[in-house]
Amino acid sequence: MSELSQLYMIKAEESLLGAESEFTDGRHNNVANRCYYACFQAAVAALPQAGITPRGSRSDWGHAFVQAEFVGRLINRRQLCPAALRQVLARHITLRHTADYAPEMVTQTHAARALQRTRDFLAAIREKVNAHES
Image 1 (cartoon, rainbow, N blue to C red):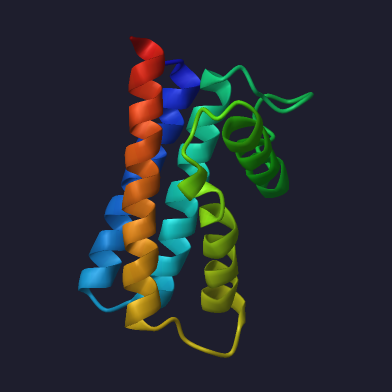
Image 2: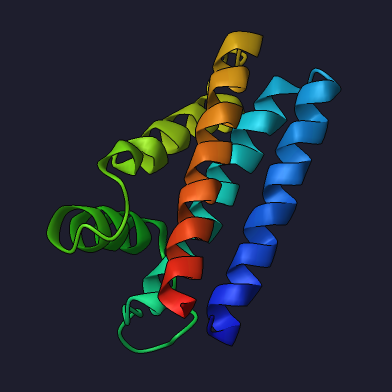
């Protein structure tokens, strides 16, 4: 695994642990936030493993770029990641926007579902990265 991919997987795992902790403490808006970032960071980790980096600055991992490249290239074109992951980033950013900006609260049910999707997303990325190393 490249150093960059490893760094972003560490961040993703930390964000997942944060989401789990926040869920235990009943802070469902924070769960939504941490779930999105865990998946985003895992997607960033997967992209360089497939030889995909942003143009220009190697650290310019914008949200639109990551979502488009992850879904468009790693799932749709190359089929390196499961199709089940296709909607995860989009669903999570919508839930994160509710949590961070909308005048409503994320429910326990929505937080629990997001947490499970995040666990599944990271497991799939770990499997992809491990398969790439073999």
